[in-house]
Image (cartoon, rainbow, N blue to C red):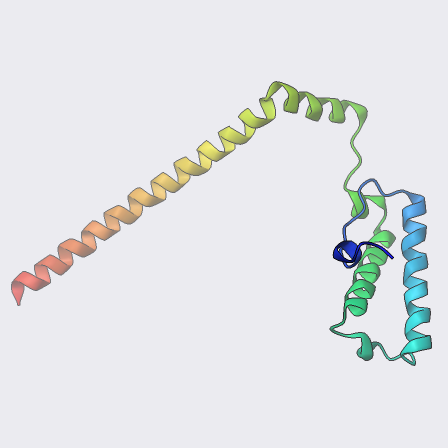
Length: 134
C-alpha cells in the first residue's frame, strides 16, 4: 500500500496523452463497477467519503477528457512559443512584462486612493461644518 500520508492525495496530470485519457475512462468504469458491487449501485452511499470524492474527481476529469487534450493540459505550445517563453524566463523579460503590469495596477490603485481621499476630505469638511453649526 502507498504511504498513508500520500494515499488520499490527488494531483492533476501534466502532459496528458491518449493513454492518460484511456486510463481515466477505465478508472471511471471501474468506480462504477465498485459502486454497483459494494453499494448496490446507490451513489448516495458514497457521498461525503474519501472514495466518493475520488470518484467525483475521476468523473470530472473523464468529462474534461471529452473536450480533448487541451482541457486536460492546456493549449499545446509550438516550438517557437516554447522557445520564447523559455527565453523570457532566462533573460528576465517575462519578469519585466509582469512588473509593468503590476506598475499599471499600482497606478490605477493610487488614482482610486486619491479619489477616495478627496471624498474623505469632503465628508470631513461637511461633518466639521455640521458640528460647528450645532
